[in-house]
Image (cartoon, rainbow, N blue to C red):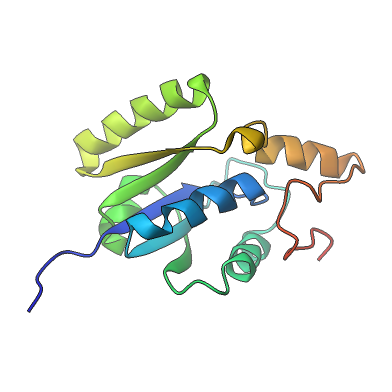
Length: 157
């Protein structure tokens, strides 16, 4: 009997909307983990453009071909969600040096308070400038965002 603990990662974010940058990080991380939980954080203080239900639906649609992906929502500290979901890793994507500085600090704190390791994947260079906030801004001003989101989703739903 194999008593090895499964490698479960949480990839947490608002995903408002999920971009091809997020998708790339998740797909490239699949060989590293037994399961990846894409966790949509609920933050009542943050004004999201798209509903929580819509964001979850999009993520499920994008990864409908992948058995190792699970989509959940949560409130509170990410480390607490990791603990309750059995995750032993946090997955984070890094686009640039500013992301590294920010994520490194959070990763160190999460390790201290939650005994969870953070695994960083560098974004693909051509995807580095893509941010959900920029995609939202383009979308809200009537611009075409199709180059930044999966062809499997439609923001007009």
